[in-house]
Length: 285
Image (cartoon, rainbow, N blue to C red; front, side):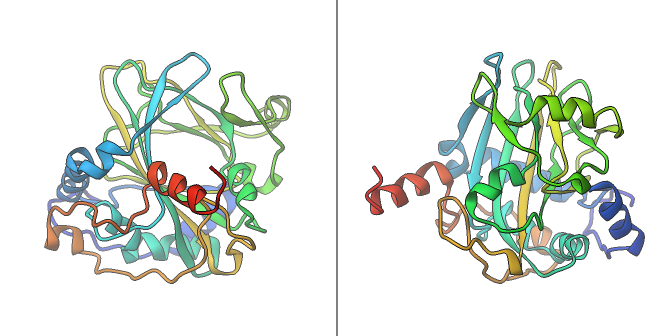
């Protein structure tokens, strides 16, 4: 699709679904226009709620990626991304069921300091949040050029069909897929560097093995990630930050441009504050 300064119309082609099911990931070029990306990026940069809820995630070398996690999409410019039909319908088609919003995240790798992420599957985390099935996925939206030099996402094509790999912890505390098992998997599957332009979207299955390198370039690498669960896979027991099924209230596909810049409204449940509140309420802390 061509990037243009107007709304983007999108329908899910059947071959996209087949590619996702075969490879465990799908790149949709130009899913968002330049004007939409500008508004989303500005909202994330300027919103006080985003700025105050960031957490630095260290890799084993001490390099950091700033992450901001929230549970409800809300009505902000960036929250509405997860409510657009072009996003929701693509994920639903790929996963084969109605989907609902599970959580969202901003991962910001700053120039020369953004940290790496070890090989892992997202279901390695979400299994612990009491989701029975690996019927979940993520849409990653590029807000900057994402290249090999600044730490773009790497995936092992088809790894989602190998099931869930045992996860362990690195010396720095990251949860990662069993390194010995990953070494063997890399002998039989293709490693793909998912280089993206701003506005490109990457959809990937929760069991797709993925990682990223440190940002050693002079450019930013900011990514907005919206994670989705299937309706039948709602957590069987409530945990924080696991979120139960609730229908997505879709908004028109042109809503980002038509409504302009919007910040958080207070319904987002940013993880750094919401999780602590829930633990206190439950008497955990």
